[in-house]
Structure formats: C-alpha cells, structure tokens
Length: 340
Length: 100
Length: 170
Image 1 (cartoon, each protein chain N blue to C red):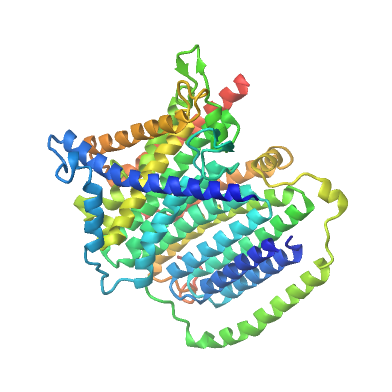
Image 2 (image 1 turned 90 degrees about the horizontal axis):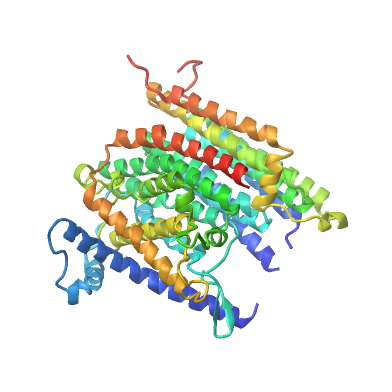
C-alpha cells in the first residue's frame, strides 16, 4: 500500500461526497421548480438568481428549527432512526462506478470510490437496510399514523424487492457478471452505428419492471403510501422536526439518486456515449446526464400521477409484477441460451 | 491469519446463547429469533470449514439453510399471526392446547 | 495480526449483540440486536473469503427475514415487555450452569481437536472458493437436485403461510 493510493482514496471520497451532498440539495430545488412549472406556478424563485440559493436558506432554516421529541416516544430508537435511514443511503455511492479508468497525473485512476466484484449484491444489501430507518421511526414515535406508515413501508419493501431483484437477474444473465463496471462495459458500442448497445433495447420488459419496482422501493409517487400526507399526515416522519426531518429528506433523495444510477448502469449503458472511448473524462458527464433524466422522470411522475390505494399496491406487486418478472427471467434465460 | 478454532469457538458461543434463549424466552417471536441465531451459528461453522478446506459444498449447504430459514420464517410467522388472532397472546405458557 | 484484531472486534460485537437478543425484554429490540449479529457474521464470512454468502446473508437474513419479523411485531403491536411466570423462575437459575457447562465442553473439544489444524499443502494449492462463480457452478452441477427441491419448498411455504394467516370468512 503506497501513500499515493491512500491520497487517491481520500481525494475521491472527498470529491464524491461534496458533489453528492450538493447535488442532493439542488435536486430538491429542481423538484420544487419543476413541480411549480407543471402546476402552472412559479416555485421558489426569491432567494438568489432563479432561487439558486434556496437550498442554503432551507438548510439554515432546518438548523434553527426547534427540536421536538414526543414525551411517550422511545427515545433511543427515535434518535437512532434517521441515522439508520441515512447511512445505507449514502454508503451505496461507494460502489457505484461513474466512469471508466482515466489517466490523471500519470496515474491510472478508476472512476469509482472502490471496486467490488459483487457490487450489484452490495447495493441490494445496503438498500434493503434502508427500510429499517423508516420502520424504526414509525415504531418509536408512538403515533398511530407513524406506525401505519412504518408497517406499509416494510410490506411494500418486501413485496417490490422481489420484482426488483428478478428484473436485475435478467441483466445479470445477459452480461454474466455481478460487477457493475463489467455490466456497463458489456453495453459499449453500437448496432450499425446508430442504436447504442444498451440493455434497455434487449430487455424492455426488464427495464419497465425495474423502473416500477425502484420507484416503489424509494417510496415515491405513485407508491408513496408510507408518507401519504392526505391519509397518514406524512406517515413515519410525522413526529420529526428540525435536522432529524432533514436527514430523512436527504436519505430519500440519496436513494433516488442511487436508484437512478443503478437504472443507468444496468439499462442505459452507464457512462457510455459518443466519443467516450477517446476522452474517458466525458464518461461522468454522460453518466450525470442520464441520472438527471431519471430524476426528472421521478418529478414528472410526481406531478402527474395520483397515489395507489394500499390494496391496489399489494395486488399489483404480488399478482402482476412478480409473475411478469418471473416470466421475464425465463424468457431472458431462454434467449441467452439460444444466442450464446 | 485467523485460526480455524477461533471461528468454531465464536460459532459455539453463539449457538449456546441461541439455545439458552430458546429455553428462557417466553414470547413465541423471541424464541423464533433465537432459533435463527442458532442456525446462523451453524452456518458460520460450515463456511469456516468450507473456506479452510477449499471445498465449496459447505457454502452450498449454507445457501440451502438460508432458503429453508426463509421458508421457516414465512410459515412460522403466519402461525404466530394465526395464534395471536385467536388467543390475543404470544406467551408460550398460554398456548398449551393442541388447537388454535 | 490486523486480521486477528478485526476478527476479535467482530466476534465481540457479535457475542454482545447475541446476548442482547436474549436479555432485551421487548421483541423489537431483540430483533434489532439480531440484525447486528447478522451484520457481524456477514463480516466474518467476508473474512473467510465467502463474499457471495456475506452479501446474501445481508440481503436474505437482514434484509428480508428480519423485515418480516419486524413487520409481524409491528402488526401485532407487541409493546409490552414479556413477563416470566414465577413458577418458572428456577429455570433461569438452572439455565446459567447448564449453559456454562455446554460452552466449556464445546470450547474444550474445539480447541483440543482443531488447535493443531494447519491447512494441508494440497489444500492450499486448490483455488479459493466463495465467489459467485464457484457457488453457481456448485449449485448447478453437483447440488442441482437439492437446489431445485428448495424452490418447491419455497413454493409450499408461500402457499402454507397464505393459508395459515388468512382470516377465515365467517
């Protein structure tokens, strides 16, 4: 282990963390502005040019809000819950590759914090830990609405995790690897110089399943039942205020970014795009653009769709998503056998 | 290099704690969790031997044990819900009849 | 040396969390302690070069089975602490010497039998196992039959739990 390797790690972690946290703040702004646009109003535009300083103002506001802990709450769990939600959400970024190896300062640098050969499984393991934050928050607040939110969240997570994993299995069969770098590299190049070799074209069913399940996993509209404000008064975070509430907020947006990054790597060719072989530094740019596409899609859905009812959600998950996902796995496996 | 005996010792201690839990706990769900703990202790032994002998079958056993544990948790918790619905209690001392 | 220190930390955490599973009176606290045990065990699996099972341990045990436990605890809303009946108080006292005997016995055997275990030269030459490739190869060749049988088991478990937990229509 040489000292340069250590410096490289520290620098990479620092840069990624800074960019990630700032990006999260600005995604919130993007969401509010876009929603405003969709709903024919302006959205926050007062703080700074085009409201660009709004995240800063929000942050300051969160810091100075009064912190309330309900009297009958389970204090220990109540305080731990936001941390449990945030840590897995931020850790996943460590195994996500956002570009190929580049040559910088005379060193070969991999554009990911660390490379694991089962990174797909690591991400699945970490995201499945995220649900405990919500569950703990719902339980410890000692509030009926929060408890309902936690219950719904755990049921929803178990149900949609199955179709999510089954949708990923299709991609894994095609690329023969659990390594996200390898999966992205398999999608290099084009067919006939026009259509890029992305998995979305070979497995449209898998992509649709993945997208629906991932929206359900991140608790976003139309699957935001754990925090449905009209029926559960914001669900699991009803009792949370100040920075604890902000942490849940950050965790939710971090999960959205991770989900978008996964969708990009698995189905949209990761960092691949025109001229990326010649200039590897273009990779992260393309990667960010594709992630941004998914984020806008998330916000667009929020502006467009109504919420599912709970029984509809469960029926849809178990009676439609999982059978279709299983059929898709069989189809993909048969195709893979036939083609290779 | 960690010697094999350390892994086995850890596994034995965890297994014993799980076994004690099965005896002293009165709540069905807690007993269930202690059984999961015992299963995990055994898994550790299997993986340790598999890794030291460079023989994959131990890990395949663990894989199958995990699926069995998942099935067991599903059925067991369904039973717990059925029992709770009829008796309003999960204390093993209250569940002493051969019917729900 | 580093590895041993790491193992000792993990083992201490695992044993502490396991003790917490049986000492906590609220099932939810037990469940979260158990998740801690699973996480520590996943760490030891990775130390044993069984990365695949380490990840699967987190996904299946900590991410699915324990969510199910927590779900049931929340669904039944078991907040009250369990109370031991007085007539069984003596069992608590009995359990401690028995547990101590069992632990000493097993530890003695383990240390006696395996303290001189050194990996044989021909074993060291074999490739390391535990990556997804070796597990997949094993599952689909020598262990195909049990692997297929587990899928039937899972199917039976799904049907069984639906039937058991379904509310009977009056």
